[in-house]
Image (cartoon, rainbow, N blue to C red; front, top):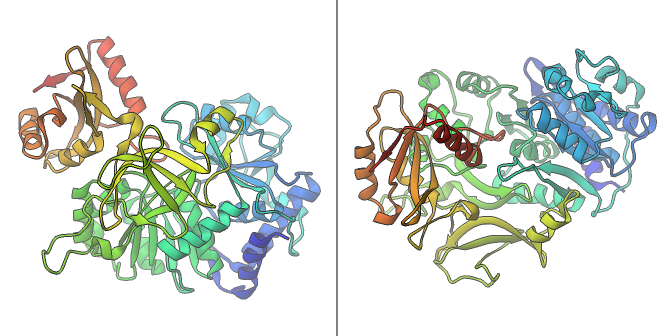
Length: 527
């Protein structure tokens, strides 16, 4: 039996005539998605000989073919390997090679990246292209592959322990690692999402602005099985977001904080009818408090924050809409800066270096247990052993919990700065910096110091209508934090490097700063 496949097919039958997926100007009914996914699944298994457990890399923008491929791989018992569209040719090659992908599904948008790696296009694996793929003469066209399959219901029997997805980390600490989740994990994610994060009704419409290869892709199935509609946005822009919300009466969206900030600052927001939008879920990176304040003022209390990671997929913590509301007595929002409370179905502890639970209010490393947690890193037993210990997943995120059960993520364990024997958590400093009116973006890192061991360095992008004024920013910090936490060095840059998932890439930032320092091109101000 393949219970996930049956769930998908049941939705295809029960909502057959309804629109399931909208992709640019194209729309697909539930019946069409069901038929196409059956065709692809049967072709992969019966024509091209793929077997249960084989890995299939999916390198596509947000499009209907991504959804169809996802469902087809579930039906075929194949392991989906989503490849972030922002990855370079070398990163794509590493992932496809590392997992020994048996097939690759892609399109012409990535022809250049594929051509830069001969091993990707010269190997024995079939390459299925949604459209003509320049430079790849033996690529199989999507429509031809589907014609070789059958529309009738297709499903390979699977067990709960069989692999479902191999999600590669963004690689900020080295080579990306492939976190393998299984069928049991996907069931848990489905229920966790519906029970904690999105209370989906048949009339709901979700607009996917973030890549389906990342967090937004985990929301497609919960919408689909409830008979709701998925609207896919291939490339984000605030104006297009507002247009699609108005056109399709969008009720739900998921995005990273950077996109929330862009929507708040978009001047044309007031020109559109956004009254249908009742839920914006955000996560994937810390949300600066000033940005959240602007978002609540612009859109109202429609926000839900979630916390999760590739190794323990979201949601693990949820900050509900009501947690964003001001207290009726004090007028202030409760749990300001919190990541949320524990999601139903998830176990979490905060531990010290020895693995012992810390006291309430103290900072410890988040460790997570539950059926949604990965089974391990693909081909990396040492990393698996370090991360999974006695059924607990060690996240590397440092947090504390208050008496009401709200978790506050302080920072990444590896990013902690030790200055004069004191622990400094960069995120705490960044939250203060973001409150200065001149700061558009910032990142706080440790800088080697002969006296203190490390000193706090702030790398800042100034708003376009402001000027660099390290003295003003330093005074601002001094009013809100202890002296040892205050940045001593300020570096102003035009932009901060980002990972493929939109997070500030501190590893790359440190490398760029080091390279600039070697060339004596690093303007630093010491305060």
